[in-house]
Image 1 (cartoon, one colour):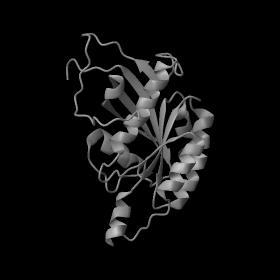
Image 2 (image 1 turned 180 degrees about the horizontal axis):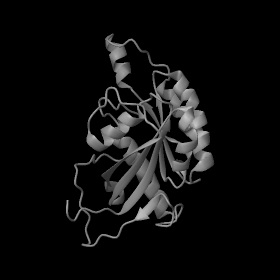
Image 3 (image 1 turned 180 degrees about the vertical axis):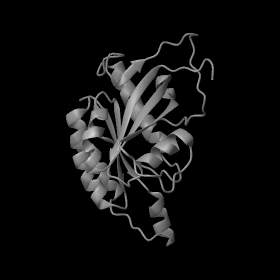
Length: 221
């Protein structure tokens, strides 16, 4: 991996109710595999990955903190919100309660995180909706795409539905949020390399390499 470097390090937090698939999304991003029955997160878990943002001509290193979704760990996880540049606010499309509770998680993030943080609402487990259509699932969609999209727009959030199981839109969620952060850096919203969640890396050889294949689809549209 010699010579591998990046332009920015971006700190992300992943938050939402327990059981919505936060850990599975992180493992899908970092290891490209699916955890069917992950152990409950105790406090926080960490993962990182290099991704390419072609529209900005940048490679960024994501440092992702997966936070516990239970009330008993809430005071601990709040400390990880500080300085984050990006947030995945996750709910389960088959659990209306997790969508309703996303409002409380968002309020927490906005109280403790950088006011300029980019937040993307992610509706996870859409694979269960496909199984429902084929008659092989005993769980039904409880949150429509339109309802979630409308709430996200109202709150000024980005929005995607995804599946940690299939991998659908998982990379895209992080890429879309990263693209928005880079846009903010370019326009001076984030204080380049002085905001805690944004660290500038200066390549030593004048070039940046990527050690993994990346999704070339546009994220800034």
